[in-house]
Image (spheres, chains in turn yellow, green):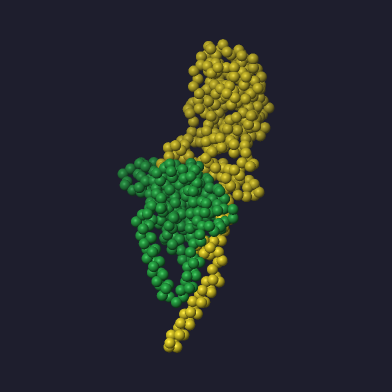
Length: 338
Length: 281
């Protein structure tokens, strides 16, 4: 063999040996274990930390809220969609609730009417959705995000006034012969919305709402008697002896009312939806008790629970004083469904 | 659409593979370093599935993951896009994403749909801030004949072209059916970005590596759902194990007539769609 060929072969073999040595030296130990890749990288990727923790994690502390959420229409919207990824919570502090200015933006991500959204998706025309445009309030004033459906469905009232008058004496003991209560802690019924009276009596009857006095009374009533009573009391004049204004400050109550209550109950306590009660001229003591009951969850209304959550005892007294001082007779501008 | 159905593509692949094998063997026989070659070949052959799983407390031979998208349910809220970025620490700028949602709008008198996604300038303007995503209501006053949203993500193909072109073994298909990227071995050549027919891969300029959806491999190996599935408020995204007959994805495929994207490529994607129009590719 010529010398230069032999040299070339030695050189080539040298290259191959160096190459193979380098490969075995530089190739990761786990490479080729399962295929042409580094097996250790699988475990490295799988070890990435979780940002989203799932509702199961939230339930450990917020069980009550999770129970409410999981029983209502937003149950398919996981906690972390609105509250953000829960990693590090609660150690690193509170999860930010959407700021007031952000709430409308957040809700309309899913609920703004838009071509392409399936018709089954509840959608609103943001520009004309009544309470929002009329008062500039946030969605969460009327809709509890954990239970977004409003209790605003108006029950049909077909009772008779005369029949109602016959049953009224059993109510008169507490609510007064003409529907004006003699006691600051019991509500006036005269002039109240019939649809609201039907709804609340039906709730006491079914046990959805509980009250030591009202539950047994309502359970004794038939559905048609409830209709008759509601029609009768709605027909009475609400103008009775003006109720005591209560201990609160009506002026600061007015500001609170505009922010918290007016979009449903009206600025002066006469609302737009007959399924919701008129609260103008109502007994201050009764209003205070009810607001506290909503806040404590003793009365079950998701919307009222949301509204009252941020109210202090002083706020409640001020609100009650303000609404108790309003005239129940003014006629609302329009009774339209929101 | 089962991958085991022998299409003409699969047949052609099998033939080429045999041809290549024959050529390779003869070349190897001719070469002097035959023994060395065999040793290397034996090493690089995929290990039998009997070998243990690389992840502790998780047997990857017992799962075969798959994904479903019900486009008839999608409302285009883009919560999936935002959640994915948070979960996987993806750059918040709207042009880099592991998953995205396309909107198809057919206007009266036009024969082609108008298509946009979260990175369209109008939609960026509507979102208002970096890292927030929303579809602008740009067609509310137009005469819309038909419109719908289509969520998209990596198809985790059974025959992934991105894996085929990777020169370093940085991207690979796991036994349980997910295509992953080893960021330590990725040299940032972006061949795979070019190879993917779905545009599912993007380049991470900060770390100089390629990136893409992993179906949240760190979550699914712990028995959780991928982040996008977790946050979808309408159940448009479905995920599960094909080896389990009652899993959400098995039921989804069984109960619906599904289709896959670009079947003509022969990649055999593992994202199954319901409710797509002919213009969706």
